[in-house]
Structure formats: structure tokens, C-alpha cells
Image (cartoon, rainbow, N blue to C red; front, side, top):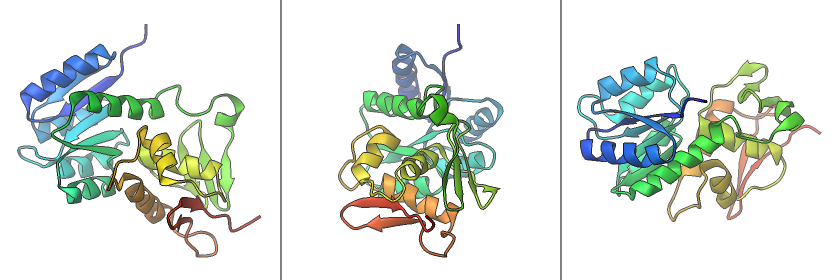
Length: 236
């Protein structure tokens, strides 16, 4: 029998940690909690967790510092908990490599739904199966390897977060076609796009920075006003 997926919750709210352990346990997850940043970071670095739930406001290091250090060695999916109304926290978190965010206070069952969505995108059954999953996808000098979830530009490997990779794969599979922000949110984040939700836009911004310009120097991922995004093809 396979071991249950492992979730690490880094939050100093003991009551919330206990509640999430109960709810996620009912969904088949094994939950471990850390009440401070140093302990949480150490556990995240020494054990291969399926997903990390990380609060921004922590004693000692804050959540951003934990995420920065974690991203130096790990691409584990990270769901950040931010203060409601603090848009800057969400933007900074996504820029630093968080895969999604949830503002506090929140319905705990919404967090469970977010965890399930992120896990579906990265679990063994994620992505298309069969020969399609094994085949490399190429657009100009960009190569995507779905089976290994790896990306190369001009032969050099590019490290992406879970959400960034998922977003890129959707765009690559539909290269030359506009994909709406709503569709990207559904397929990448596993949820509907909320009002003033900039999650997809921040992931696109991060991708542009990491992938760099296209072979001809133009923008690789283009914004189509009031429509969405398109991965441009420069070569036939």
C-alpha cells in the first residue's frame, strides 16, 4: 500500500494546524506541522514533502525568507497564506516562487480544495498519459519534457515552480493560439479566476523573466488585451 501524500504546514497558529491536520487527514494526506520558520524550513529541506502550506507572518524569519531559502534547493509546491487585503504579500510571494496563495481569514475547506488542486497537477497521474506525455514539445528554441516536467531554452535547463511549469505546458501545447486567463486559472490553479486575482499574471511575468526573449529578441509570451496570453512562434 502506497504511503499517503505528505503535507507540511508552517504556521504558528496551533488551532489552525490541528484543524488542517484533521481536514487534510480525512482527504488521505499525512500532515506535519511546524510552529516557527526555522523548524519549518529545516523539515522542508530534509524531507520530500508533497506540498508545503506556508504562512507569511511567522516568528523569527517571515514566510518570504523561508520561501527564498527553500527555493534554493527545492521545487516543492508551496501554497502561501497571506493577510487579507495585503495584495503586495501575494505579489511578492508569487514573484519569489509560491505556486498559489490564500488570504486569511479563509474557509479551511477552501484550503483543502487548493491543496487537492495543486496535488492533482503534480501527482503521478498529472498531465496527459501515454505517448503524448513522453514526447518532447518544442517551440523555436524552447523544449518542454512533460514526462520529466523539465524545460530547456537553447539547450540550457530552466528551473520552474510547479505552477510556472503547468502554465508553460498549457501555452506550449496551444502555441500560436490565445489562451484566456480564465482557462489558465482553471487548468493551472484548479480554480476559477477571482476578481482582482493576479496569480496567473504574476506566473506569466516570472516565466518571461526565466525564459528570456524569443530567438529573434521579441517577447516569447505575449499579452492579448482583453483576451489572454499567447506563446508566439517565430519559426515555422
